[in-house]
Amino acid sequence: MACAQTGSGKTAAFLFPMISVILKAAPSQGGNGRSSYPRGLILAPTRELVQQIFDEARKFCYKTGLRCAVAYGGGENIRDQLRAVEAGADIIVAAPGRLVDFMERGKVKLPDVMFL
Image 1 (cartoon, rainbow, N blue to C red):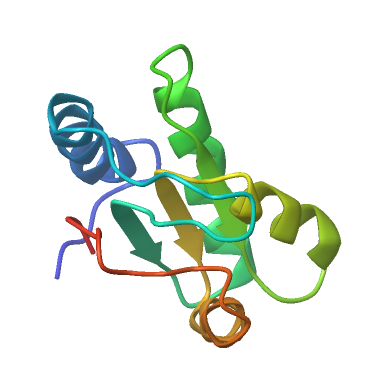
Image 2 (cartoon, rainbow, N blue to C red):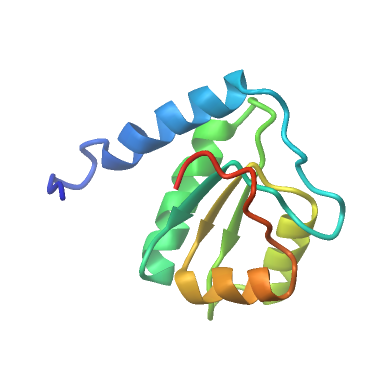
């Protein structure tokens, strides 16, 4: 367990190594238009934290070719989340309840996960 001030780089501290290793690894199955096989999975307990981590992940993945998707309940339209996941995501940032929902629907498959 770590504790540090806001803006100190906690999110970057785990995202940069994840992104670096995923970029160096062989290409994954990606998505097949119906489901994603992410290589990075980030779980957070609240939708606010999920959204905050997702926003940072999207910034850090800009121009890398890696795709990020978000999955959480409430707030954002579930159709938009499903569309992003179905298109294939290398990194998924999710709340546990929505992740279970997407897995039960067959939208997220976890055999390629390298980082949790």
